[in-house]
Figure 1 (spheres, rainbow, N blue to C red):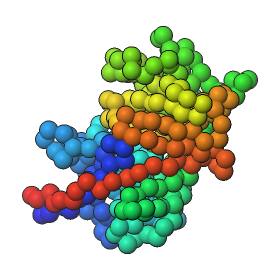
Figure 2 (figure 1 turned 60 degrees about the horizontal axis):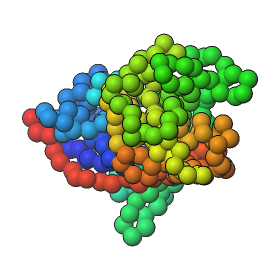
Figure 3 (figure 1 turned 120 degrees about the horizontal axis):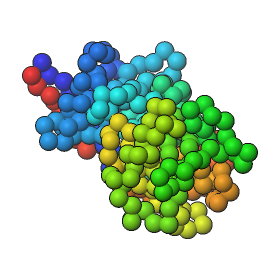
Length: 272
């Protein structure tokens, strides 16, 4: 038995994509286990998640993503860019498409310039809440967790946003799990540490739920971080976010959009 796959990344947030456009390759009851096995960086291919691409009854294509801990994420901003690049290269979609996800329909616009691929993703409208607790009078939900003031923003998946003077001095592996598992987040949360670096720019480091460690980039996390800063009135409608793996741009002037790259790394075959 052979299973073709493609490895892609968005700013170092890397994925193994399984093409199920024509037929199911990995049975649904094995998708989570497959992710745990092949996301492993020593005994598998190595990735932050497995993307499953298939046809959709309501959108152009459908995306599911399973993470190394066998959980299925509702959405993934970097993952959708990678999925869209693969689908475009395979001839499944044109320069615009919609993607069905558990978080809802996501619109994508693609651009190739000098063989470099970028995509602009229409993100879900951020929700500033935790555990169905409404936002406070000033329009956001925040809570003191340990030594940090934590803001909540759901951009398709739940995020905790922590504003700090410098992201370089944060021992993320030590402090993030307390926030990630805090009772305020019913289903857990990704944790973003955010530093203002200019009038319209941020640096963000993210500890990802499901991966259970820091990743080089998180699209929904960059969006959540920018959304909180924008919502608080600290920055305008276009915010440049520098992640550990590279830049993303978040726009708020026409809904919420995220702009960033995707790269195909290699393709291969898993043989049994």
